[in-house]
Amino acid sequence: EAQVTQNPRYLITVTGKKLTVTCSQNMNHEYMSWYRQDPGLGLRQIYYSMNVEVTDKGDVPEGYKVSRKEKRNFPLILESPSPNQTSLYFCASSINRGADTEAFFGQGTRLTVV
Amino acid sequence: GENVEQHPSTLSVQEGDSAVIKCTYSDSASNYFPWYKQELGKGPQLIIDIRSNVGEKKDQRIAVTLNKTAKHFSLHITETQPEDSAVYFCAPSSSGSARQLTFGSGTQLTVLP
Image 1 (cartoon, one colour):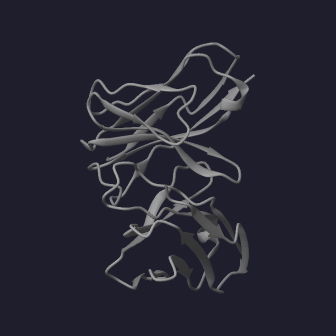
Image 2 (tube, rainbow over the protein chains, first blue to last red):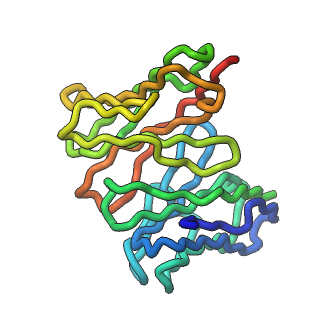
């Protein structure tokens, strides 16, 4: 089954403790991205990657890192999480770099930073 | 960058009635206009999209209409059913953009039985 898989689904952590949210897709998509979803703000892009070893900032990149060492994986790293990073996070992938292609989303990761 | 406004933010309709959600955008280069549906506890999923060379597209009970001159497009759902209850997002974009979608703030649709 074609899908985008995120782990974990839920995470509660403390301020400053490094964490990684994993994302994997099995559709051989070139394009992957991370979004955060907050009430009243819709989904905002954090980082995106057009292919292996090619990443760039989205609208809200501060406090986040990403890497793309393999085509299928695109982990999101919070080196020193803060309470304002409490949010619902989604990973997405698309077949190519164009913004006019369907994005496939993971199930989401609800992160709480205390 | 693209400035996207979506209205209304919440919408309640009786089962069987129609629902319309409007999305206004700012970038005249936008040429792709999708609508995503997000059910509770899930990620958004594409339900319908339209490109700028087409004014309207229908898929069973859902349709999207585009007014490029006025820079807005709308999602129409007819004969609404309880399973249509969800959050809907528009995400206008340009095929020339390397960045992915700019989402509207979402519309919570509730279909009352």
